Image (cartoon, rainbow, N blue to C red):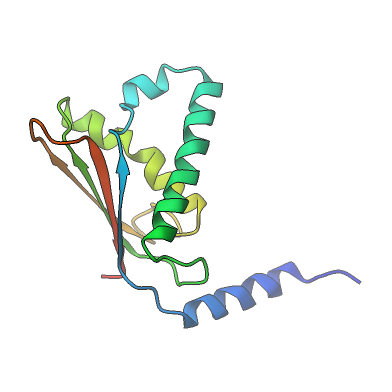
Length: 138
C-alpha cells in the first residue's frame, strides 16, 4: 500500500492556492558575484556559494514575513544597489538569487510563463553594496 504522490502533490497545490501571498521585500547584504567570476570558479566553490545563498534567501524571506504555505509569487523585482561594474555582469550575477527563490518555493520558476522578473541597477558611490528583492503577484 503506497502513497499516490501525484494526488498528494495536487492536493498540496490546491491547499497552497487558498492562502494568498502578501508582497514582501528583503535585502541581501553584499554584491552579487559576477557571472564571469562565478563561471570561472571551481564547481565545489560555486556549489558552496549557492548553498549559502539559498539559506540566506530563505531566512531573509521568512524574516520579511513570507511563509512556505503561501501561493507562489508571479512577479519579482531584483535591485542591485552600489554596483560599479558592467550592468550585464550585475544582472547575470543575480541568477543564483533567482534560482534560490525557485529552490525555496517562493516562485515556481524564472521562466516568463510563470514569473515576470525585473532587474534594476543603481550605481551610487558610497552606497553600501546590497541586493533588494521584492516579490508580489502583480
